Amino acid sequence: MSDESAAQRAFPMRGVPQPTRAEVAALPGVSLSRHPVIAHKMTALRDQRTAPPEFYRLVRELGTLLAYEATADLELIPDAIETPLEPMTGTRLAGGVGIVPILRAGLGLAEGFRQVLPDAQVWHLGLRRDERTLEPIEYYNQLARAGNLQVCFSVDPMLATGGSAIDALNTLKRYSVRHLRYVGLIAAPYGLLKLRQAHPDVPIYLAALDTQLDERGFIRPGLGDAGDRQFGTL
Ligand code: PRP
Image (cartoon, rainbow, N blue to C red; front, top):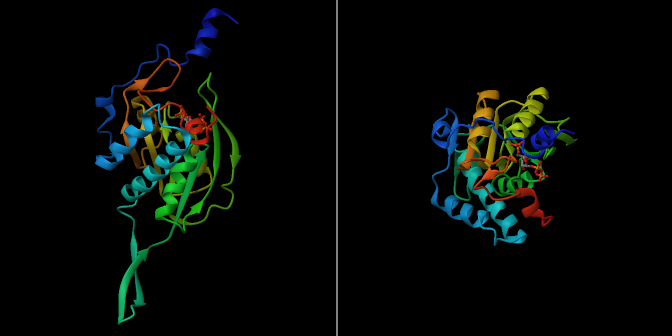
């Protein structure tokens, strides 16, 4: 292998132009959380002193908080019930909710979503990013029976080059899953722009937008590897 191709494999983002944070912060359909509790928990998550049990707990809590933000406009239908005192017409969600955790790192976020939406269907999708090419590789797919849903959330803490998120949404669309939304914790401007361009119809919900990808394709300042830090495989 030539020195040039070895460097290309070790530093796949070297020399790749990247947009700035300011250039992507106002893209249409992107919701960047302004909630102080989310900001507080994100700082604890990023802190390198945060050990896996605490890290996993924080990811779950952030999933719950983001679930509130990402479900704020769901449709309701009337629901006639009787309270202990009298009949009334309440409301309930119109149609089912799907959650697609992108393995592994999406598992904690999905658990947080399930705190809010315990009836949601969970469709696991396994994608692993090749650390040299940064290309996503699918290794598990449980989507075959995905049903008719009001909304389906693809959840993954990290949006780096955007390859995994784009691939996951491509797969979901191939399975005719509609009303898709993407939910993540942190994004690099590069990945956010790629995702917005590839799937302009999919609303994006994020807890934080970071500065850039480094030459290896890691989000900076970032939080390290969300999968390894959740599951103690550092
Ligand atoms: C990480 C992360 C995303 C992906 C983001 O997963 O959880 O799925 O990389 O990178 P991209 O935007 O450049 O595609 P990883 O491949 O490390 O797998 P893991 O969740 O099993 O740790």
